[in-house]
Image 1 (cartoon, one colour):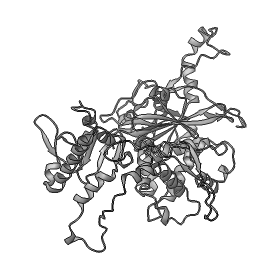
Image 2 (cartoon, rainbow, N blue to C red; image 1 turned 135 degrees about the horizontal axis):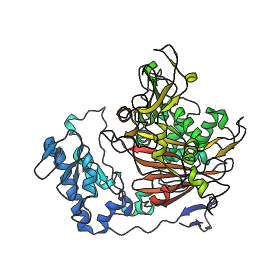
Image 3 (cartoon, helix red, strand yellow; image 1 turned 135 degrees about the vertical axis):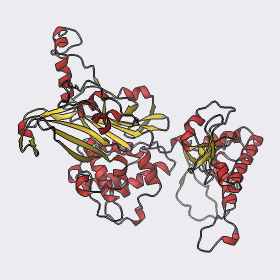
Image 4 (spheres, rainbow, N blue to C red; image 1 turned 30 degrees about the vertical axis):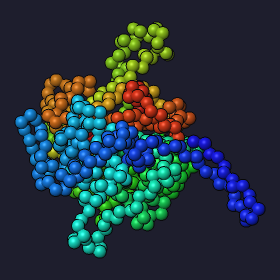
Amino acid sequence: MNDTINVTPARSNSITLASPKIAKQKPNPTPGVIASVAFGCEHIQAFNRAGEKSWKTFTQQYNSVLKSIRDEPRVKTATVKLGKDRTDITLRSTFLCLQCPHIFPQEGTKAHFEGPKVHSFCHTLVVESRSGHIFCHNCSDYIYDPTLDLLRSRLFSPPPSITTSNKRTHTEYASEPAGLVAANSNFVPCRAIGLRGLYNMGNTCFMSVVIQSLLHNPFIKTWYLSEGHKGGECEREHCTSCAFEEIFCEFWSVEKTEGYGAVPMLLSSWKSAEHLAGYQQQDAHEYMQFMLNSLHTTNLPSSGDSPNPSTTSSSNTGEDCTCIIHSTFGGKLASTVTCSDCKNKTVTIEEFLDLSLDLRNAVAKKRKLNGSLKEKDKNDKGEKNGDAPDEGMKLDECLRRFTAEESLAKEGYTCRKCGGARDAVKQLSLKRLPPVLSIHLKRFSASSKNGSTSSKLETSVHFPISLNMSPYTCAAQSSKPTKSSSTTSSTPSDPPSSSPQEARYTLSAVIVHKGEMNSGHYVSYAREGRDWFLFDDSKVVLVGEGEVLKAQAYLLVYVVEKF
């Protein structure tokens, strides 16, 4: 869109002219019954482009569905068809298709949307049975359309006889001329909302990737967009949550696609943590921990006396934190130590916000197992300095080693029942899985004995789109034979038995570190709807799923499929 300077010619009787103003040239409105800007999304606009008859039929159908919701008994819209001859009544809200007489529950949306399409617009736009709002499957969101919402407000407004002065009522405003609206508005595709980059303000890529992963987290997004944090009432100085709320408003409420400078968030981070002040490169995982802890502190429940579960065991507090951060990322880890002599078990429950998986020990064990193969092929072209080429490892292998049994020497364990130092076996397992699982792959570690130098592990870790976490839970581990109870030892390479209920997670975001330890750069991938996007500072690029799976991940964020 070009900017032009419009200057009014001087007249003989005119006073001193104001300074020239930059006026943006507006594109010609798309011809149709109503200007294109009046539509909530491009898929609703398709009905208008199909012609006046199509748009009229669509609005009449929507009006008919709204009347059935308002006038028909609730049981009618709550009755769903589950099979050929089977129906059920649900207490939850249902969806009514605008192009066919089908009613389906919330858990049946995917099957309905991905079913065979009878005609061009079927299975795309549906109506929610309680509020009458339109949900667009292609946009994966509820759609606000001025024309259609006016129909809804007229039908759902309370009658004048029961309207009191202290209740908000629907007011019908006079519609602006379509030409005036079209001349002063631009149509932005609904898919562009929320897809913005963040300007690099001096080695701040570590902050940008963490913010992007949280912006596209469905639980965090829903909470902030529903005014979970009331910034207008917050009295905290340099509040991190207020700065984050401002970013959400800029990304999801303002129709812009250019980059955004997160200056308030950077300032809040500097004020909250002294080690973050300055323009040095920081670790993205450390900043993620800072962000989660800071958002936890600024969004504590109203009681204000809830403990910090990240540092306090639930066995000591007796209750869990209910803030948005721990409700989203908070899980419980069980550490079981079994005495080799008396078989006494000591279980400690700890809460976590992410899982840190050690790659260096896993690589060392893998190289040890492949030692004979390395010795045989050490003269191959693909080998450097006697090391075998990096074949990588799977995320499942890292999780199996994380929850594998570990032998403890007498010096490291004292049995309370035996009353002395004993050999023992320690094992970690997941007691409670969080709605959002954050996994940290430990690529950075100290190389020398005094820790003066650090190095980066470049090993590839192959991670899936869909991750099953049930084999690493307490229920699954309890069904396996232990070293102390079975003569056959289970090695970390053996996959644990699956629990009856699968805990399936879907990949939501990937944070990648490129380059060397002290001179690298962070980028991130995030899923929005069915598409994947690469966020490289202020640049946003649509990418394929294959590129995401090939990335050298540093942080992985998985969202539970059913919650």
